Each structure stands twice: as structure tokens, then as C-alpha cells.
Length: 297
Image 1 (cartoon, rainbow, N blue to C red):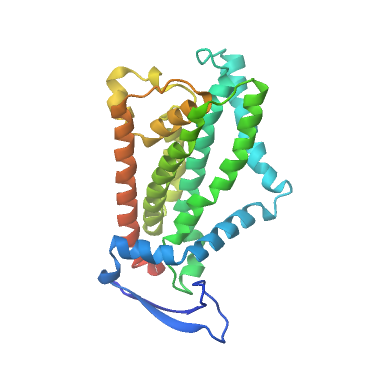
Image 2: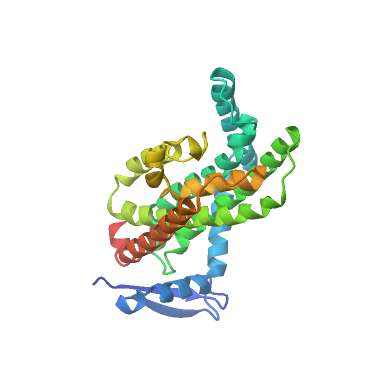
């Protein structure tokens, strides 16, 4: 069993610090006794100030040198929506029942963009901060977690675009809008599990950087973003239901548009089960890779 020993200067707030004074040096050893889930979760929760700092750093670095800054969080989804509107609504004249196509599309696209960004960023989190990992100990799980949380800023800005869209098409959200955070949390769970799994694999296999974009591209077309889940043939529904983003995307439409919920209870349960499996698999793989992560990177 690999063992990692690292010395850290820590302030009273729990955030690593390189200064002297009252900071005390602490030694951490990663061994089997520290590999239990509860211990890892408790350790990460104790460093929540560091997690907040990592989230702020991610958001700051992402837009610091961009000319348009955080405006890109509006420009990118708006431009993507415009392209899909032109291709599917103008060229192919596709209609989504009685709902204008852009209104039908955007709620699902918003949660999908969050999922895509979270998984991609979390998968690269360890490789991106390899130099930091070799210098100081902190709960490594904070890196993928911070990359799952920081895209919520973009999601929140995207909600502004969604509100403008609803106003333009004279749609008034109903009480069902309270369900949107519930489906977002499910999407966060799926993104966290998949992000940790991909981060652990990326540390060992550099092929992940080539495989992941293709996988997410295929996952996009396997999720009901551009089309309703009801269009999937009945004989494939049982397999389709195990994609957690089916429930998340259709749930976002249900919450925003106030329509009837289009999925059977069995589909939702399958999606929840898949999310739980992803979390367990991702956390387990990450804990195993964590013990030798500095050697691998």
C-alpha cells in the first residue's frame, strides 16, 4: 500500500499557508485507516474554506484574461442556442409540439452545458494542479469538487438568458419552477461521480483527454436536449432510462415550462440509481488513485 507523507503549514482557519508565526506544521499520512468514505468526507468538510477559495480561483482564472470577461457566460449559450434554432427551426422547420423550439431547447441545454463543463473540468483537475499536489497536502477531492461547483456561476448567468427568453415569448413560470434546483442537484451528483471517475483515470491513462470529448459528444446526443425523450423507440426506453441526464433534462423543461412531467416513475428511479452508482464508482476510484497520485502525475 502506497503511503504519502506531506508537511503543511496551516492557519486556524484550515487554509494552507506558507508563513511562519502561529502556523503549526502538521504531518499527514495516507494509509488504509484514512481511506474510509466517512473519514474522507469529514476531512473535506473541515476544509470547506479551502474549497471556497479554489472555486473563487477557478472562476477568476477562467475569465481574468478574456476581453469580454464573464460576458462569455452569456455569449456562448446564446450563440449556441442561435445555431440550433437556425438549423432545426429554420432549416428543418422542426416543431416541439406547441412550444417554440428555442423555449423547448434552452432549459435542457442549460443543465446539459453545466454537466458538460463540470465533467470536463473535474476530469482535468488533478493534471492541471499537479505541481500543487506535490507541494502540500490537502484533501485531493477538493479539486474535482471545486470544478463541479464553479460552473454553477455560468449556470446562474445562463438563467438570466432563460428569463429573457421566457419574457420574449411571453411564458410565465408556474409553481413547478421550485423543482428546478432538485433536478440541478441530481445533475451535480452525476457530474461529481463522473468527474471523479475521469480524474482518477486521467491520472493513470493520458488517453482520457482524447476519449472524454468524444464520450461527452455522444452523451449529448443520447440525452433529450434537442428532442423529447418520448421520441425514443419504446424498445430502447429501458436502456435510455439509465442515463441520468434524461431525468435532469426533461425535469428542467417540466420545471421551467410548467408542462406535464413526461417520464415514468421507473425512468426517474433508474436515473437516480445511475447517479448513485456514478457517485460510488467515482469516489471509490478517486480514493484508490489518491494514494499514488503524486507519483502518477
